Length: 497
Picture 1 (cartoon, rainbow, N blue to C red):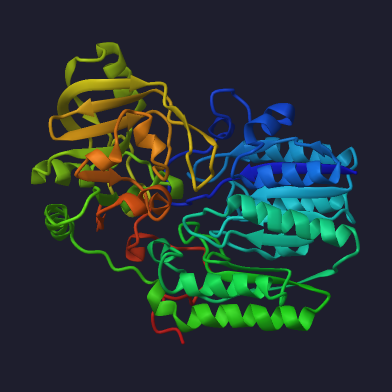
Picture 2: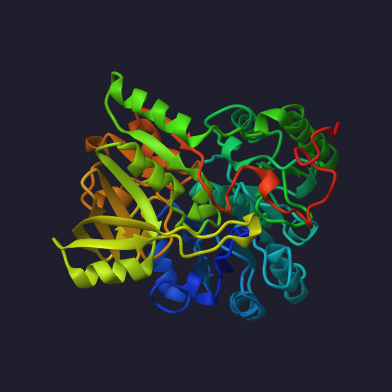
C-alpha cells in the first residue's frame, strides 16, 4: 500500500498587510520540508501529519511526504507559492497511490482564489478520481463545497486552544483506513448558518462552543457518527463562506448525517448572541489587572494584547498595549513580543549588557482598519540574545520546533520586552523559558495572543485581563470593511432571525 501524506496550512487574514510568499512556509531552509526531512521533523510530535505517519507505519504502508508546509497566518498566499505547494502534492499523487491524507487548515485564501483547500482537492480529484482522501482541518475552517465534494472524509479540531491536532489527524486517517477495508461506508452532510462568531468567543473553555463541541464528540463516542465537526470559522477572511459550519460523516446513513448536522448547527444558531465579544477600555483593564496582582494567590496576571495576534494574521508590531503598560507604571512585567527584525539587528550589534535607546515596532500601517503604525521609543539594557529556537512542551503541538529567528530581551527596568525576527504566537511556556524568563516569577505577562495562550498559560495564571489594543485581529467588526462574505449574516446584521 502506498500513502501520500502532505501538509499545506495557512490561515489567511485578508485584512492583514503581512505578505505570504513561499519563504514564509520555509523557515531557514529556503523551501518547505519534504521526504525524509519532513518525516523526521514531525514523527512523534503533536501534529496531524504525525498521526498520518503513525497510521502508515502501523499498516506497513509505503509513505510518501511530498510537502510539509505551515506558515504563520498573514495576508493572501502568493499565487506562485500556492502553485509550488500544490504542484508538489499533485506530482506525488500522479505517480500513483492507494490513499491520500492531507493536513490542511481550511481558511487559505490566495491572490487568485477564495478557497485554496478546495482548489487543491479538486485538482487532486482530476488526477485520482477514485482514490480515497482524508482531510484534517482547523476549527477555524471556512468550509466551501469543493472541500466536501472532493474529500472522502473530513475531520476538524474540537478544541480551542487546539490541543487535539494529532487526534484530529488520527480520527480522519483511521476512518479512511476503515473505509478502505470495507468496514464502513462514509456518507457526508454539511451546512452552515449565517453567523460570524468572534474569535474571542470561540474558546472551548467556555460556553457556548464548549457545549457544542462536547455534543459533536459525544456523537462519535456513542457511534451515532463516524466523524462530527463544528467549524467556528475564521471571520477575518472576507470570503463568501466565512463563518460557522458543520459536517457529519456517518456509516452509510445520509439521513442520520443530515439530522446530526442540523442539531449541531441549531445549537450554535440558538446561542449566536453568546458568540459576540464586547471589549472594555484599556485603562479599566489595566486597573483591574493591578488589583488582581495585589490579591491572594500565586502566578502572573496575563495581559492579553489580542488585537495583534500573529496567529490570526496580526503584524505583531503594534505598540498601544505595551505603551499603556509602560505609562501605567506596572512593574515586574514580561512582554511577548514585538516583531521588529531591524531593532533586533541593532541590539545584537550593540551586544549583551549595552544600554540602547531605539524605536521598536509600529513599522506597518494597517490600511484595512485605517490605522497608522506607531513606533515606540524605549530605553533599556540588552539582557539576552538568542537564536530563537525552541520545542513546544505542549499540550499544543507538543514537540514541534518553533523558530522566532534572532531574538533579544530588552530590560527597561520594569518590563522585559521580547523582540523577535519571526512571527511566533506565545501559546507554549517555552517561548519565555527558552529566553530565561520564568513566567511564575513575573507579576505580569503581556502576550500577543487571543485564545491559544490558554494551552500553556491558563493554569499558571493568577488572572487573565483582555486588553483593547489596535490591529487587524480586532473584534470590532465595524472597523473591518466586509465586501465578499455572504449577507445577511449575524452580527453584521444584528436583527437577523
